[in-house]
Image (cartoon, rainbow, N blue to C red):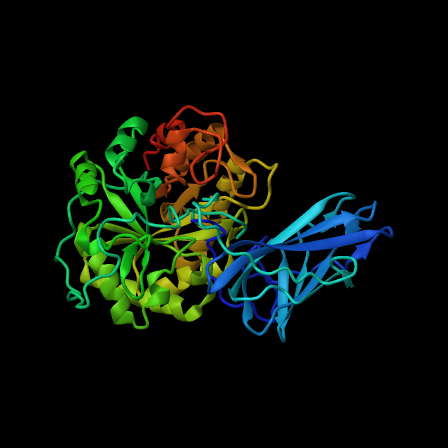
Length: 492
């Protein structure tokens, strides 16, 4: 869930799409003017790279000595790359050249200040040219820095859902022993029980990076008992070819973690298995047909007798309308074959609401006939460090509620019931912070408005309560499992 975000991208077109201040709305950008002579520069950098695409950003630095009122950055991509979703800017694209302009809510860069915007690219290759307000981004030569690749050690960022947010899929290498990573060549028939499996209602279910539990040193039951939790979102099932796989290490058909899931249910809770995440290849991208995709989802549902599944859609998965449509069609058929199966979509969000791409994923699911249980927003990594991330999470919930109300034509109360919210604990990837006090505010708001679901990224970070790499520590002052105990106070 590297909200790196979790962004499902429909390719940006020549029309201006406003990511902030109202998804899908046209915005007139401010005419760029620099109020004093000096140097305005822009630096390209990558946040993540998954092979078939990457997430990147431009950081604009005002060294002019005076405020810059309005900016316009023009960059070109090679033929091997295509712009997808974007945030914190309005962008038009024509002939491989994209023009990014300041959003309407942030027109000025103060002297010595910075502005950033991010985007997802399908394909490979860094920008080949760049100008800022008509001058070279580097003051002389356009940047051509290569896209960086992910490190081979455990990631330092964590969910899933724009800027650099979201859950990780666990260690980048799996255990050296255990069940094979390939699945049987014969697919099971796409059938299911006629009634939903038994289990508790899932209202609070923090994400657990199951890669960190694969050695057996910690169990779900232990995490739950320490934090007053009963239910969990298990991350992530990805793919090895068109075969379901726990983070490229275990075949779900072999029922890895089944004993832990049984213990959770025996204690009155339940689990939802989350497909996708920020790294790895989501099944809808790997499977070429709806039937093959549905069979892989079904294999996981059948292996664990699931009542709940989650689709954490980010990275390259957000950049392809074909796979979005394939996923929606397969999920509708899966749900029909499994009466009572609850399906949630976990998507990137800004305080202003779902991105245009994320909203498109919701509409695609609705149009395909999916009875969507929840839209779970990754309330994290907004790129607004220094602001109150608790307040921003609440604003994001309100904005998403309005979008759902519009799409489904429902009441405020019904729309709130369809919203789930998942912040990233402690320090976010963008250096913003979500504190225990923010968690208390968010849970109070969720109870008052009867949201459908609350979660957070990630439970092992809460247990560790440490300072260090972000994939394992929150880097804020807290007691072990303090966030868990706060979130456990959500009653729906």
